[in-house]
Every structure is written in structure tokens, then in C-alpha cells.
Image (cartoon, rainbow, N blue to C red; front, side, top):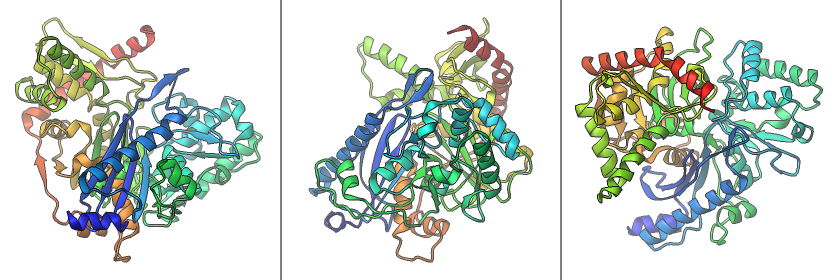
Length: 532
């Protein structure tokens, strides 16, 4: 305790702050071991306004401040120390989306998040132009869609960035972005560690043809790799994050990253042939490639690790939101019956019952947890849906197993595509909310993907811890260590975890569930078209 107190007072800890879909979380860690010393959090929710998913600007700032204040409170409670300084800080957030500013730093239109699917035309045109998959979520898709729609704000456009890039600039004054997050704005080159120049020229020609004088680099942030200098905390930034005035300016910040990059870091999945699956509000699988994919696949994003290696990303917008809503129904029933259960107990009861007592194929019960559109399955909008045949075995276990299985349905379709490219995976690690109930989400994913799935004891720390590790990498003692070496030799050298293997009955059951899932997508489509 005395040693920890001293490194906090001496400013030798690292801090990672991540803006997730439903929670902003801060983690303070020891840069020599990665041990989490304190944490803080703040809950928030996106809004659907005028048909677009957004977070308000004041919610972003107050969320940052409340999260950091909660971290300070935890430090003071545990160690009797007021948090004033750190060796390094890192900011990460949900990738992609569109934040557009004028030259005075004013937000021109409400923040458009990754969850929006209004950019279909732009994404298709850019994919055709580049012969390279440009997802609807990417910032360049949002920008080009605004151009196609002749949006008024473009006349005053000075800069475009992601949520992580916005917060980082507010803290440092630097318009930069880590290469992993930048790869969700515009395609990047793993050789030059920068935006792809061939695609950049084609996009600049599009801008000129549309009557704009600015070029891509005029408005997009500068690309940085893990470990590079990304600026220091300014006086204004220190007061923004800590209005109480205790935080001291001058702290180095590492390149801001997306939640995909922090997920790879937090699971030690930045080496070739490793992969991780982050399963929360959305779900994405990240597989570090030996070589670029041979063919264009609209369902697969091409992004990078925080140090620039090529990654195949399978992303689905919907994972645990509707699953959590069903748990909420049973929480309400338990309370009505006079039995208030805490979340851990409730999730454990429902999940373990599903794992032990449900039929392997959910007994004919089928659900879709689509709160929003789902590109992989061709849905522009979402309608949570539960459907079954009259003779289905409609039990509590099958209902919950169906909700668990369907949270992996879209990602399974994307992973099947990677098999056609002969992508090799030596190790797949899971992290995120789906894995909080020990063994359940892990086992169902192993059966769903027919791959052994590891969950590390540190998996619950998630993205903010991964961001803290990237901050630690920037101030590492041995500057010769690469990011994979730093994680292997320093952070994860004594790591522990559990492994779940697929079993034939579970694999066969999930395959039968997927045949119904795929065949009944027309039912989900009809629900979107008719239920307004």
C-alpha cells in the first residue's frame, strides 16, 4: 500500500479513459505490471434524434468530468491520496462516426455515431471507386454522404474527427489520431503508417469535382502509431477534465485510439494469427492477418492494430442490448414477487440455466436483438423480434439461450467469410459484458464459431485498461520493445485465464439455430417495413 501510494504521489501511474456505448470508464494502472490500482465510471446512453443516433456535446464533456471525478474518489478512498499527476494518459472511444467542426472548434452538426446507417449510398460509391470495402460507419462515408446530400454545414467545415480524437484535441490542442482509430476514418497503409495515398488522390478528385477546395488531409487528423508523442495536457485541458483544479498540466498523452485497438491490447491480441472478440452493446471480432485478404468483402472491415498491422474486423451493431432488456424483464418480475436480486445473481441464474437446460438449437425459439440496423444481414433499421412455431419448446432456458445465440448471429456470418480466405487463428480471446457471467458466453461463442475461446482473468477490465496499457507503452523503460513484445514480456508474462472448447453437440445445435436465423431474416425485414 505504501509503495502504491508513493507512485501515485510521484505521478508514475498511467490512466486510460474510454467512451463506450453505455459507460465511460477510467482506469489507473501501474505501468510496470499493468495492475489496475483504481477505476471510475459514468453511465450514459445514446439518443435517436431525427432518425440519427447521437450523444450531446454537453453529455460528452460532463461524462468525462464525472468519470474522472469517480476515479479521483476511488484513489482517495483506497490510498488517501488526491490524484494530481500521472506518467501518461490515453483516451479511447467508440470508433468511426462523424464529428465536424468549424475553424473556431464549434461542432457544426450533432455527433453522428457508428450506429447510424444513413450513409449507404456513399459507402457503396466509395467502395466501388477504391475497390476496397468502405463501411457505412466510417468517417469518410459520413463525410461523402454529407457532400451527396448537399448539407449546409460543409461550407464552414474545418476539421473532421472521431470521438476519441475530439476529446484528445480538447485536452492537448493536437489534431491527431492513433492509426487503429484512423483506419476507421479512411483506409491506411501498413507500410507508410498513414492514409493510403492512392485512395487519398481519388477522394481529393471527388472533392474537387463537388466544388470543394479543401483536401482530405486539410480536415482529417494526423496519423500516429502506438508509442509516438501525441502532445501534452494543456492548462485548459487539465481544467476541462478536472474542474476541481487538482490535475497538473504537462502530462504526456499517447495517441488516442478506437475501442477495437484497446480491445486488442487488453487481450494481448496484437500479434499475427491472434484474435479477440469484444462483445457488449455491439460486437466485433479482430483477427490480425498474415497477409491482406485476397478479395473484397463488404462484410469485413480492413483496419489495423495500434502499431499498424493489418486486421480483419467483423463488426455487428447489435449484441447484448436486447439480451439485457430481457434480463430486465425478469428483474422486474423478481422485484414484483418480493425477491430483489443483484445483477450478478440475476445474470448468473438466467445464463447458467440457459447453458445447462436449453436445447442445443433453442428448441425452435428464434429471436433477433436488432435495436438498430445490421449491415451484415442487410438491415437498414432494427426491430427486436421473438418468433417461434406452435410446437417449439418455449421454456425459460430456450428463450434465454435464443437471446444469447442471436447476439452472436451476425458475427458468425462474418467469421464464415474469413474461413473462405483461409485465415488462420491460433488464439481467440473474449472480453466485454457478454463474458461477465463465468463460462457461459465463452462456451456459447466457442460453439458458435467452432474455435476454442480464452477469457483472461483481466478481461473484465476491457478497453480503458487497454488504453492505459498503450499509455504505459509510450513511457516504457526499454524503448527497444515493440508493442507485442511489451505486452508479452511485461504485462502478460504471468497472465492467467480459462479456455472453453467447442463440443460437437453444441456446434451442431448452433448450426441448426443459424439455419433458422438466416432463413427468417425476411421476417425481421418485414417487421422493419411494417412496424413504424
